[in-house]
Length: 79
Image (cartoon, rainbow, N blue to C red; front, side):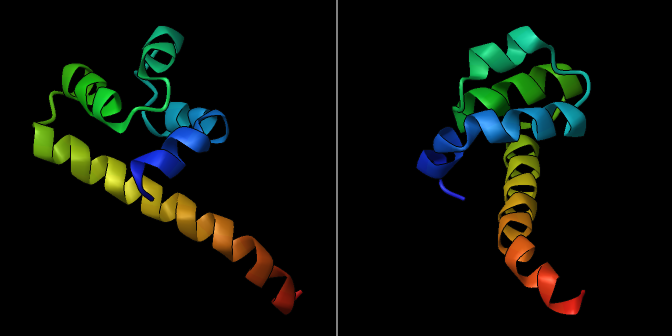
């Protein structure tokens, strides 16, 4: 998921981000405002990740949520 799509889906992803990284506060998420670089910085502060680790975590998260979006249409086939 590129940063433009991430920003566009921010309101949808915000709850999932809070669930994934429970130490983030509402103020943190308000500050991030859909910006992947800001999210990486907040993850560095809260979790002690390196910049690279933070980017990897965000990449993994966005890949999972891209698959979730695509998977919804496929899930109905085996009901």
